Length: 90
Image (cartoon, rainbow, N blue to C red; front, side, top):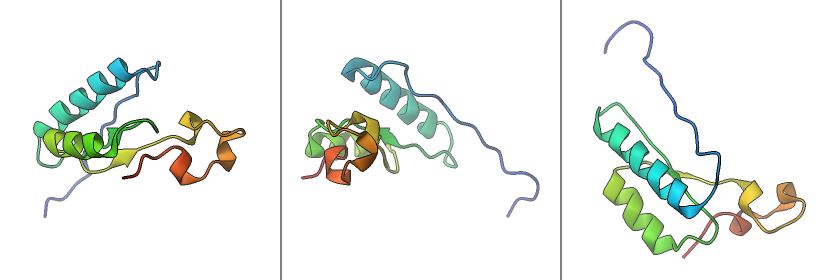
């Protein structure tokens, strides 16, 4: 085990939540994960994404989890949304 501080980095999400920007961002995250076996990435999803497509993309990109936001739900106020309102499920 190496000693010393753990190297950390992060990225920001696109300012717009449209499908094209999310796909481009998810691809970029996958590209970064592929650069180093210590890298981990999460897949940014939308409530209307097809769960099977999400599953395929996460595997294809080598990512390790999902990133969802309650603010993407159609429930008002969004903080009262059940998880199913902003996380696609099969």
